[in-house]
Image (cartoon, rainbow, N blue to C red; front, side, top):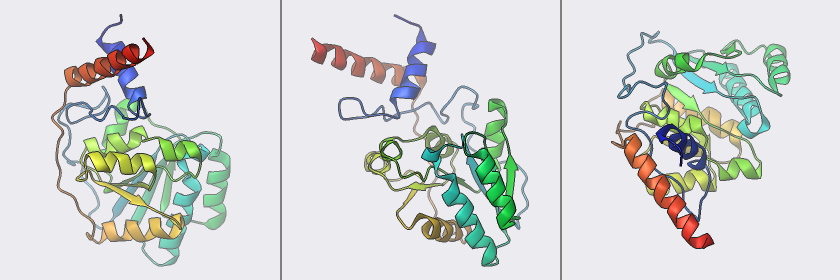
Length: 232
């Protein structure tokens, strides 16, 4: 039983994990979650054209590898790339360490926000030239595709994230997605890849998946039916 909302909520969770060797590989039409406006893919927020805005948002947990982001930002600032600006939104168990690290290293190109309301998040994504995924080294980091990846690509944004089996699985299904996986050494490769994006050396064509709520629900129900059948 359950209504369409329950099905969608389960789809959001299951879509990040493996189920019988495959994932729910479709999403909503030109959006990922309900607080994103349908078809809202155009970056129409006024920006300072002299700045290149890099965005990370999420909980400050080891899975996300935020320390790598801080180290990459430091490398770029020390090399004189003042036009690259970071906005890091989030809080959590590593928050105190991260904020202290930014202050001690005197990284002026990082702006911090503790948190924003869900309805405000799309505007921050719109205003970004580039989004960042996760860079943790745990087994979980290797096995999940975080929501922020889907949120970024649904709004036509490039996103850099750690090269993992989960990300390769996503790109195998849709190679044209604007997802940029990077391998170790993460700190240096992240800094270099951000710089390439800023210079326009890594570009993608904006596409939409044309998938709606009904298709998500149908695929989930098929997977659940398969599961029920296998468990007999």
